[in-house]
Amino acid sequence: MSSITDSYKANPMKPNLIIPLDFDNVHDVPESHRWTISTEDPVVDPATCSLPLVDLSDPNSTSLKRQACEKWGAFQMINHGIPLNVFEEVEIQTRRLFTLPTQQKLSALRSPDSVTGYGMPHIQTFYPKLMWTEGFQLIGYPMKDATKLWPNQPDQQTNFCDAMEKYQKEMKAFTEKLFGMLLGSLGLTLEDVHWYNSAEGFSKHIAVLSLNSYPVCPDPSHAMGIAPHTDTSLITVLYQSGTTGLQVLQDGVGWVPVTPIAGALVVNLGDLMHMVSNGLSKSILHRAFANNSNHRVSVAYFFGPPSGSEISPLAKLIDHDHPPEFNPVTWKEFLETKTKHFLKAIELLRNKGAAKSSE
Ligand SMILES: O=C(O)CCC(=O)C(=O)O
Ligand SMILES: [Fe+2]
Image (tube, rainbow, N blue to C red; front, side, top):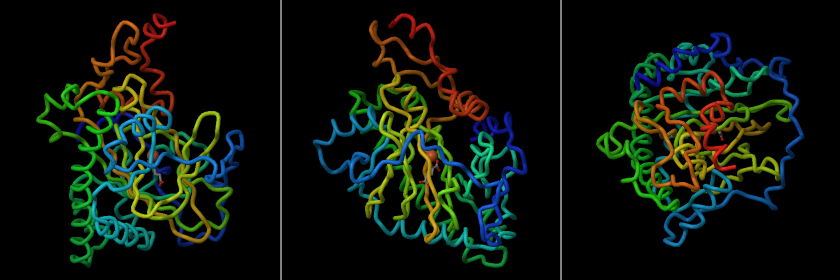
């Protein structure tokens, strides 16, 4: 954990960019938040093109998973085995947090060089217009922030922290399994992953939980909920609370809306998965919009390796015809590169020699 924080310390966010809009007191989209949404990549009709849907209980879904990794870098999944009340409870607590008065939420404002607390996503740094969102990030049991958010409500502090702890526990067990399954679809096993073997399995894995809020917006076509980005994780599991807004970019097709399916979760494959799979698994570019009738919330669990582990294409995927596409890097170094160079980070780590030798 400490070295993830160090990566943010190296590139702290401008303090004024961390503070979300005072959503309680706006009735229009201010100029600072008014986006011209490019139509270069059109939004496609979800009836004609949609993310793959993987039934995790289906033993024959391996090739679908592989295709989802390679072609999309994302999928929805059903029959994941996580009880629905876990999501209901995390959604109730998430909404409870974001409907607090603005001043109350600001009492838990994230500091510029930190990972956890209330504020705008780090990617705000890379866009000239402000986003129509607010977030709260946490690792573990967030009692320090809960006492600031609900200073006179010890029961609420505990209920919030307990729901978040339970959710992270479920997600930890689940993402470990899912990571193994996705490796399996690429012809690999957990034993092929050096940091899995050297760090007592997954016990030192780093994960961050991000609660996202997209308040009702008077003019959603001129506002951006969360701007296009790839996740820095190995895998991200996203609960999108039954509200539309998420879109993924499919090359040559356009922005594909991810229509919520009751009980389903979205999986995004991140930059680290792209690198360890030697480019086989796509790191998906995605964005999300607010809407003008419902307050959209989402809960993203970012699953990554132990912070000091070396990220490099897995040895089993490398041979004469498949040289390593990326130079080895620690997660800490990658995060530093990403917080500085954003979407160009992956290209900066590309092994230029491999590109030449495979030409
Ligand atoms: O709210 C969503 O659907 C997407 C959130 C997201 O992309 C993120 O937290 O990284
Ligand atoms: Fe994301």
